[in-house]
Length: 158
Image 1: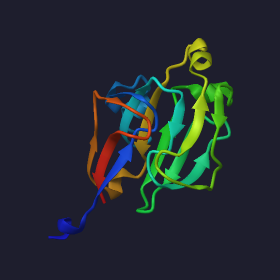
Image 2: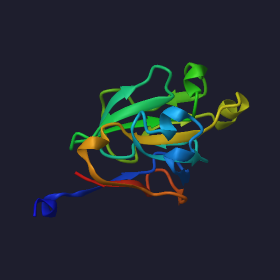
Image 3: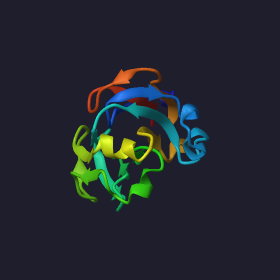
Image 4: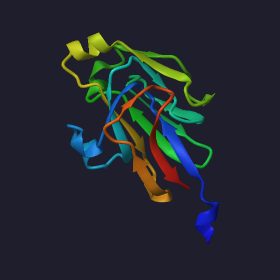
């Protein structure tokens, strides 16, 4: 009965690329869902956008990742690439400010793909819900080519 009132929420692709199951990410923290549940995107784009409406609650000093809190309390973490924290911000440009209220599709980061790849780093980008215990029916879209700011990559019910 109470399920009638639950609303499906859609998280859109923060970057263009092909979606892959988290278990396929070559990093144990993400593959074993230690940092949260969701999907990863094998990135082909260089613009990272907000995957939903909410507040940009954290923009890492190294610009390799950011966190958002949605109005329903869901917390998202977008981690651009693997081991990219080692670049200390080089190859990343922040386009939004921490604390900003943002809409889905708002540009957050621009990356220099060639520079990051030249350092031997992967651009696989985990898109995580860090508090998944508060959700029902979390579904990730796997094996699809997605476009930043357009295609749904995760759905859940709150």
